[in-house]
Amino acid sequence: MRRLIAWDLVTLDGYFEGPTSWDLGFHELVWGPEMEAFAIEQLRTVGTLLFGRVTYLGMAKFWTSERGEIAELMNSIPKVVCSRTLDRVDWNNTSLVKGDAVAEVARLKKEPGRDIFLFGSAALTASLTKAGQIDEFRLALVPVVLGAGNPFFKPSLDRVGLTLLEAKPLRSGAVILRYEPIRKA
Image 1: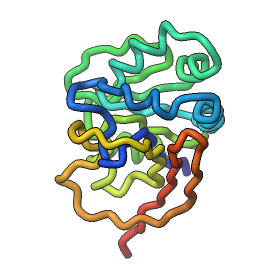
Image 2 (image 1 turned 180 degrees about the vertical axis):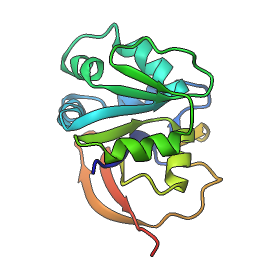
Image 3 (image 1 turned 30 degrees about the vertical axis):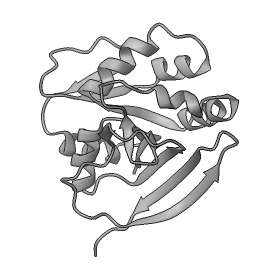
């Protein structure tokens, strides 16, 4: 069974983007050779990339014109976008799920293959967290306080206990945190 890993960069005050959509300037504070190597290492383990509509549109726009090893991986890995409003997807190797995202992810997890990575997509992350579908939260904690923005974990979530799997500090000041949800008996 494949695992679903939610991955994102978040600020110390819990935001995955600033006050406006795609306000990601804080990523530059920790981006460099060490984070790039980590990103490549992660992407090499991925079988499917999973996105909500907003993240998909931004990622597709960005990565289709980029070059380099990360771009090659992002463009070649199969992708799934969950959206009730999109009618089509144009990024190569992408399929569209218009129905029940939770049910589709449960089905995808049962398929053989490598892990599924959920990028950004806070609303989709909240739905999948509530349904108990996320097997690991992998966060790069960026040493900055934005003061305002879009929170990665939405206030509507019930409490989710987590077990720390790994904490890996980077020279940039970021810390890669890996957590596994504690499953209720």
